[in-house]
Image (cartoon, rainbow, N blue to C red; front, side, top):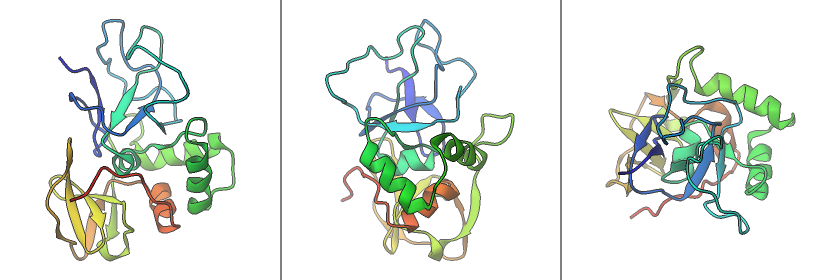
Length: 197
């Protein structure tokens, strides 16, 4: 039975057998029996990591260790409120910060991002209303389901990839990707994506 550690673009954490392209961390969210508790984060440094770094190896959801979370790809991780890890993805972290126009410390960046991604005192994702034509490639919108913005199209996000392209909507849309990550995408940061047919 799969563990509840797959993060969707909506921020929901579900049980899904596929791990995806990236791993992430929000602190210790599970109990000793490898079951999530009520909390959906324990700190503000929500990072996106590579699946393999050096020769490090961990048992997933070990007692007392952070909860390994998994994402289809980086666009989904950004939409869920994560950023590149400064350790295992240092060059991506530096590129992301520069593209977003950030100059402060990582702690200041994480505090700013936290106000953009989570509603105060709840575990719900904060969403934003933005004009569709202003969105960069790699942003994720919500139209009943999450959809990746790519060129003149949007692609429904599934747990195992992307659906068939649909026309990019017009007017105001609900955006899952938080403003800091939107700024990074507009500034030229290119997320590492699952293959798009």
